[in-house]
Length: 148
Image (cartoon, rainbow, N blue to C red):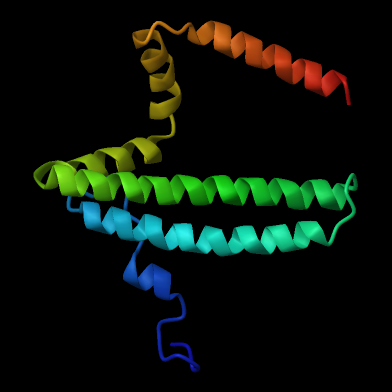
């Protein structure tokens, strides 16, 4: 317990623990709560990274590193808060299906290979050539790398 607040040392983990992979009893509300706590954490980390970045001189390794941390943290914040927002919407529109949706999304996020594989399929389903996107991106990365 924290002596100053009387709360568990990690309040967020206590009130919104991370869902366990394969937990068939996880609810949409648990998934939402965890993502909201993580969003709040990353919002604070984003602010701290921006403050650290502003203390660095542009063009220095320190600046580049703190900018990378800032971007990573803001993207993670946006992912977490958007995930929670979408799940809250699903819970309102289809409450009887929300728990299953949350469990499926959690399992897919934990597996690591589901989304990279599905992007290809989802692009093809929409008439978009994923191989062309991939090769153009590889070429762009090569051009960026060679110009440094």
